[in-house]
Length: 386
Image 1 (cartoon, rainbow, N blue to C red):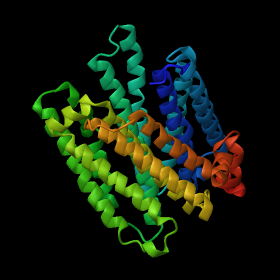
Image 2: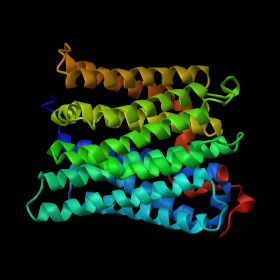
Image 3: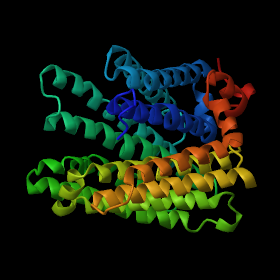
């Protein structure tokens, strides 16, 4: 595609995905959790939050440099392992603190999400020995990678977002169905992993179990919407971002249910474009739009008239890339497909640059040294325990 490009595409892809997780989603989710659960922030001594934030950012920026330059070389593996250690550290301090706090649906979701974050780490640890045994690019190898992606996307990211959402609902009149949504989502997470291995064409029971898990997710999504719809939307700032995020979430759940059918599973497995479009739907459509809504609601991000135009351009670019990837998956002929995809990506980048003013605020408290920003923005200085 780009013969003069000096770096290996797969290495750049790995750096891109790892930085998206560790440099964008993880720090923002951590900041939003501390902002939304002040009782959790004050229950844990401040140095722990400082250490976790430094580990997260050091590993993210290390990976975004090491992977494109070297691929899976020792330096990249070191930073990737450091990222996993940061996740373990975060899970440990949160689980210890949650035992001392009153129970709530929001905290239950966050705690469960961290469980799936630790479970997802098994995937990267397995791929190393598999490679050493000469089993790289075998079904076992790919199933380990898909396990990492599944429990990261459908476990940690999804549960963390739902935890933040239910904390918002509980602080604005309560939720009627949260006590049902949580166990349904929890019960569905492991079985739906089987939907990621259907490309192996396993026994029919795998399709049935995965499909039942997807049905549980759809039922939980219906109850979630029943909790969200009664909100007084006219009075909610930036509500359209939350609406778009929830629409992406609903589409994600429907697609997972559809993937339980053999024809759909085989079609998705045969075309990488479908997989990429699904991953982008979750990361950019569901998770990122929710985080933007939550940051705006918490006063961490200001979208004024001019900067909102940048957001609109970003959304146009995102939607265009999704449509192009789906079209490629169905083998539709798109003139100048690569150029169109590059143009759509440029729209997303241009939209972000247009939003530079408000995004500088985000970078100010998501960049190094993050611990100072936690003192200023996240936790009240008088409440921090040292």
